[in-house]
Image (cartoon, rainbow, N blue to C red; front, side):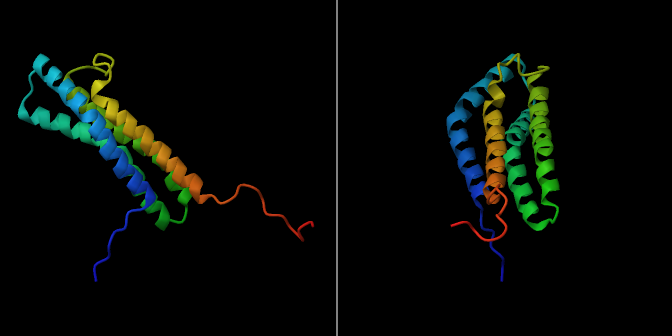
Length: 152
């Protein structure tokens, strides 16, 4: 019997955020990409590299959040997985960012006013906030339990 993969709340938030931000941002980002490509024509391979960089920077942080959350459910020192989440998410975001910069031919996104990475930055913030909310939702109560009999 095949095992079905049931999405958890973090993955559903990630999917909703991906759909919503894509609907809001994709048109503007595609127009910005056309402007950059008119200023500096690129080969089909460079265009594919830029698109891959956009996908990695945009959807990578949420994919890392979902993967780390699933891994943390199976691994005993969960705190180690949770501590590694933010550096890994930043690394994935920066890797996609670097690929887009390579195709655009600019040293940083200050030249482009950040247009190509608006959705990616928004998804990064959603991924970090959703992961933090997921961690905090697992903590039941921060107060220590009283010892002895309760007072009337």
